[in-house]
Amino acid sequence: MKYVLRRIGTMSAVKTLALLEGLLFLLIGIVYGGISIILSLVGGQLGAGLLNGAGICLAFVIGFPLAGVVSGAVTGALISVLYNTVADYVGGFELSLSDRKSVV
Image (cartoon, rainbow, N blue to C red; front, side, top):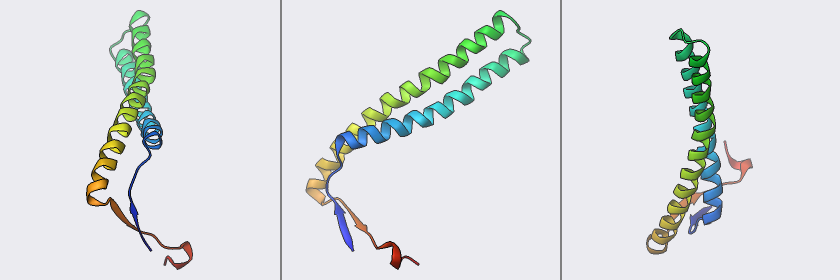
């Protein structure tokens, strides 16, 4: 069966991309936060230096996902609006779908 994707729901794209980018940026924030803690320990900074590294870690783990959610929402809105506009002129993506039983 062949189907054509004519429109993408803007709110659906916003929610999906905001969640995906938020999760991706959370992973990146955890990695960068861990690096900031490790670098403060390797540098021999105990006390205030380690506290500074922990603060940077917390900023990465909170700030990166928030930035990812915002950028994902903006990207989802732009992509859906642009796709819907272009699909009106060229017809959209053509999809070939089949039943699960017939897939080999």
